Length: 287
Image (cartoon, rainbow, N blue to C red):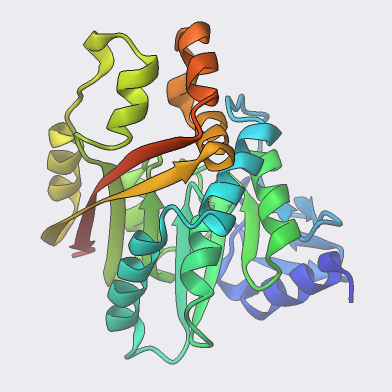
């Protein structure tokens, strides 16, 4: 079976949760080729195993090389494994009472965080990954065929009200109005944001001193305004990277976009580099 056919079958199993992003109408999968709504708006499955449900072209700053580097950092170099283990624990505790739970990764990029998290869990959780980047979702679908992959807009998620049990939003922009709409009552919202020492060594090596520090207090405050029973967990650890891993980290990080080229070139030559992962995990309920 081709990836396109597999994706169509998987979405067909869950077609009742999707809506047309143009008119909000019900949709159905037709001939393993397209998703079509009652008003005949049509969205075709790509051969790589995803469906594009964007209604307009959108500018994306991330390119194919960045997504490939991030995929290697997460899936091969295992930089975020402690995060994935903790996410799985929280997700399992939430979904064990559901026979078939639905989980959305909002802002999934190339899909590695979702894939790595769900790889540890069999059966009862079905994943959906959505991102505005076709390059990211194309890579995600080419690596994992057990998740429903959508190119779509977080400001217009093509999923009906109250359909999801869990949403994760990892180091990515959020749209809480839409998240609350598609998340069931008492559904679980998990947002991961960088702590003050996140990638601090990289920032110190390539950015000027004014950009070494930042705060996520405003982000945490906004999350608490939208969700109830909020818990905040801190996850901090360090990992030693070899030169190959370090170069992938540089490629995947937007921190390098405006950095001094000489500083980046000098950093690329390092054979070992200690990096800090410092994250805040925000966990709330949709009440």
